[in-house]
Image (cartoon, rainbow, N blue to C red; front, side, top):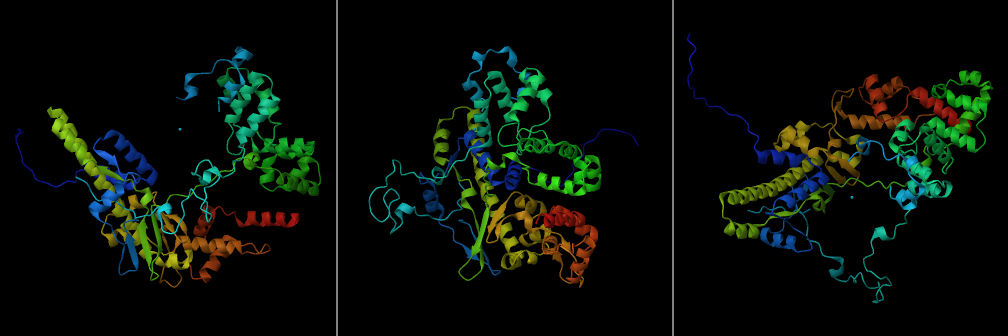
Length: 526
């Protein structure tokens, strides 16, 4: 057969990921915070987009154009409410020892210290000041007089007490105890290297190179600031932190120092070997262990009060008037953007070149697709969350023991979507329920067979059973993994020993041997 060039015409089908489709998929998997940042970037780059601010009445205008959306309940009893530069790379700093004291002032030390689519998903709200029968917030409640404050804007953050942070506490001691400006600079640098437990990385050579001074001077400053309050601060390991605290109590004798040098034997509960190495009796070893147990493991925990903020729910659920669950979107997490048709009309009349016309058209198309994608994202999240509530209704009514096995395919088949879409929707999305705030992925668990072979149990429900059994165990009868398997099988759960061990380790529950030793130690202290 001769090899000759020729033309052929073929017809086929393929899936093409258009930029608009890629944008819709990207928005679907973003969390509420990431989505807000993305929309802010689009608002700054696209002149055809405008923000629908509550203060300017933009939402009221949209409500008039599109009408209010009402909640409805389906036959399953679940309604949806749609309203609802790295310094390390730049080399070391100027050598601190080459700087004069006048060049390092206290200020420099302290300075070492950020076409429109219906996209409305919120209910009408009446300000407190306009609600009938409610007094003006700027007036005294019940007296009609004005409040005795200079500003009526009194927020919760203005009345909360502010505690002293660990860094501020250490900087105050540095200013008092260290007179040399170079030593102060070294101490401030080391303060900024502390981790959450108040410990330093054991890298004094790197610190001396970074600061441009000798390592001996850094070590000398470190030795001085290790005597600061709280005791144990600036330690480079847990053992060194304990040694600092014991030294302050005048309890770091040779036996205690030897015990700290052999901390691995302590972790292994090898008390006999410790007694032999420390040249003390077994009872003395127990007394030293009790003394160490009373020391602070995290010296800075008394100063840094970390306020843990809960995750912002994307969806919330509540009981309806007839006891049925109502699912609604959290309007506060939904960006409110519009296509500025007025601005587009004005600009279109003034375009002169083909490039300008193409630019305006592209920006308008991008704006339209963004608003449409936001609308589609909100609708998809609400649809998936509603189906999850339907599937896991027993959990919301009776608790975690009634959480049923669920996979992505179960939800995808019911709402007629692809599993990948459901996976993107449930990633980094949270729902506010009467039982707490949960990530949507929490409700997808594998199935554990029962001894009867009928209804399967959720793996999360089995974990809950294991935790209950361990919490209620008697100190004299610690439950091993084999015993847990026997008790679970008696309760109708068919599970292997290695699965019990895996679930126990995932919940960070020690083994039966470790739990027995710990409870004996607690009993001895009591």
